[in-house]
Amino acid sequence: MVDPNTLALPDNASLFTRLKVALQCLEVLKDDPGNPTCGQLINICLDLNVYALLVQRLQGSEEGRRMLSERPSLQGDDLDLAALDLLPEGTLGHEFARYFRDNKISPFKTTLELKNDVDFIGKRYRETHDVLHLLTGYGTDVVGEMELQAYALGNLGIQSAKLILAFGTLSQLKERKPGFGLSAYLRRLKAAYQRGRASKLFLDVWYEHQWETPVAALSSRLCAPAVKMN
Image 1 (cartoon, rainbow, N blue to C red):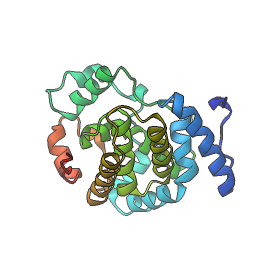
Image 2: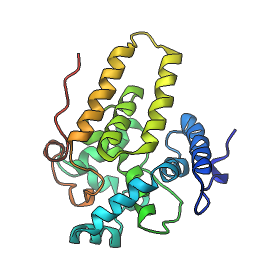
Image 3: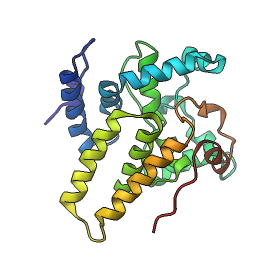
Image 4: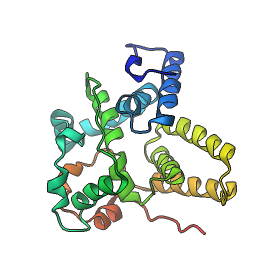
């Protein structure tokens, strides 16, 4: 049994070490999908190059440089869900608060130190996960989570999403729940991946400035239309 409190990624870690830590994180996340340490650490293990490219992108604009400087946060301690819940129905803030209430979960938290801008982007990716559920409309069931990973892979090239998709698909094949069709499942993942590729990058959006924006309007602005699946 892996103890998540003992997991850490050494500076200048080799590819082997990064893969080893990522697999250990995945083992924890299998039983504790909301684990605040492993959720971020697995992304840092595999996606440093992706995050570095996103940092370069942000550094190319005044708004991006301000985001890197101020480092906005969607962590639990930085959110007032009660206040967001008072916003009009359909707005990002109201639906964000309702999302946590309906799913009986809490916002992302992490204790990992942010040593640089790349670390911030890794944290930002993890904490925008729940916002992306709202914007894409993908569910929080197993298939919906896999669709969201496929979307993130298409949108950002997130390597950790490949690992999660591989393990998630193997788990689906092992369980073979009634009504599960492999062909339909793979079509949904492909559609989500292609939708992510066709959408605007979601990680450089300052969602904290969009609480009063209707989810439908923000989704239309950022996400390509979803393909209707049979």
